[in-house]
Length: 117
Image (cartoon, one colour):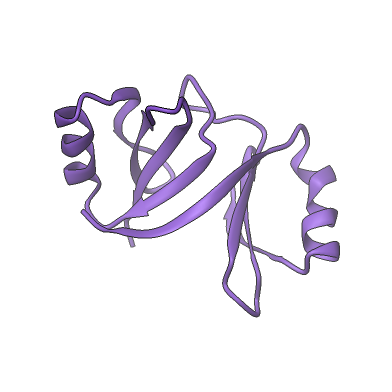
């Protein structure tokens, strides 16, 4: 399993209200990824990405970061072998990703995800 990208998941109460700050002030542009509860914004100059989310609609807890990997099944197996708490089981979501949530020993919840193109 190889990590290919890490994206901050910032919690907001209203995606539309928060959008202006991140697009106008920080100069990020909205990508095609906007599910109404989570939206991804990227810098057109650097490719730096962040996600805004009100709450995760399919998981019991919200993650602090999303970790894209090249083999989510291997990442899931490794997390289980190491005895880490799985907060949300390995699931293929309707928006085309396979993911699970794992709690780090420090208490942070990570969304480990693989996108299917």
